[in-house]
Image 1 (cartoon, one colour):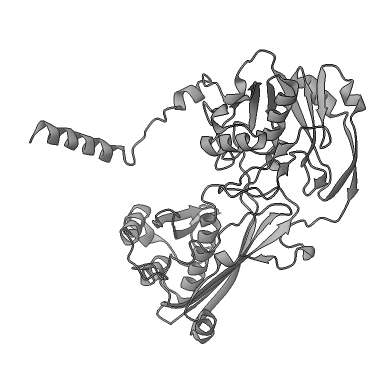
Image 2: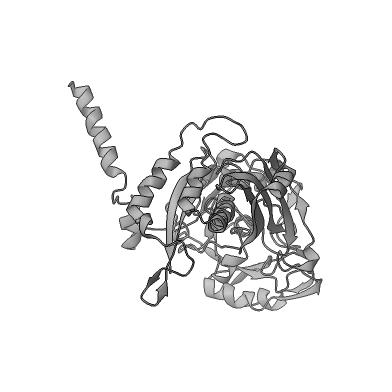
Length: 459
């Protein structure tokens, strides 16, 4: 063996030992010992503090804002409203599409959800800003709000044609199938609640902007700031030393970010703005609430003949987010007939956003629960029915997978989990006085569509 071969062998061995091993995160020691200095913990000369004022209604418009008491409070430097904050330019969206509007105001005149930013106070200290923000009085012309997906005012929503996928005749095949199951699956709104709050420090030096902000997408966030303020991309410097949790929510520059950067520009002083915990649930997305129905038709041996899937997710009144509910449903199991369609329903909420496997999470939840329903209906082991309907190739494209080792993964998981000892009857497994639930699960990731299994047990 040559020296070159020995090096490669050692490298391969190290990689094999790393898989499944206990590895230390590079930033772990600094975080757990308190040494880590997060983005908005920087101490800058002349630093000021901004606090947001949120709407107390879910729908309507702001008719008046009285800022006089706040403006004369100790330490206050500015009270910003939709009428007094500087005008920003529209920015490209998350996918780089051109802005829908030429201008952008991060403080709302039209209120579309409770907690929406309608004003902001900037003061010398954080305590002064908090006290002054409580003095801002806002009047509204309130209108009826659409609460959630089940609200009768919501209607059936907007069809999203891009999410439609069909082959064969799924409706007819389902009607003709000897065994049929149909069930509805709902998931609630899910929010990120990172240990490090969302926030930033903004500082202008001429037409150069420096932002200290936790970011999961430095390039995209810097581009947004450049577009908002009409400065070259290279004039924006984004500093993100650590991320104390983000889960998709720290991938964009948001309304509070624009407020801080605009205030810094207007005052020509650095401005720090950090969201408080209640604003955690009204200032950025989280996973949209979803509702889906999965109908499966199969023969007596458990072979799926048809899958009919219908889904809907919530989106905002003034923004669009699609949670692709058919992303896993359409590729996980082999079927000659398939139909998946999706709508979005506008409700009075902040625009949803990416949260840990957007689409794949609720999509996998729906189809995997339905497969369990089918297994129980037929009296077939839940793992066995998944193997019976194993997709040897992409069911729609009819092309082979580049790699798919779900059979092997199920076998390894079943052995490690002790699946052979499980009982298929509901409420039949106990640990003392506690009921134990168990089931195999599979899902996939969108980039390479690599299915991966889970064996679930819960009390």
